[in-house]
Image (cartoon, rainbow, N blue to C red; front, side, top):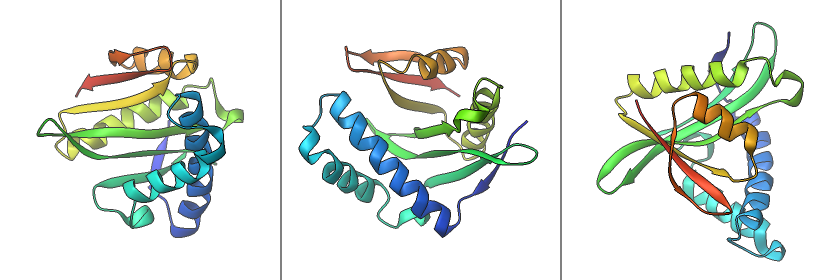
Length: 159
């Protein structure tokens, strides 16, 4: 079982450092930028998506907890795609020592319930093609691939 709590400011700052580094790596692996300017591009994109940090409207950043510990984090926000407002799952991370225990699956169920409660009918996400564990999780949760190339996959689920 998992529960979520909103990130506080200090947690958001730690998360931002982590996510910018992860995004920089993903931008290179995805073939979007050269390694030499990946960090700057990642920071720019992060600041565009979350201009008010963890308090940016229509973005939801949570710490994932089990019964005892903080075990990861999850972030989704609202995007408008083809005049439709959808939930977009930007990030899910379960700490290494808590993986393969069902927490990621439980977190997906919980976040989707929150999306439904906020009125979203659809959720999308992007995953690097090399992230087999995440692709397996999303498929298990009912996501379908709507676009893919050798670098990554865009997935979607009707809620």
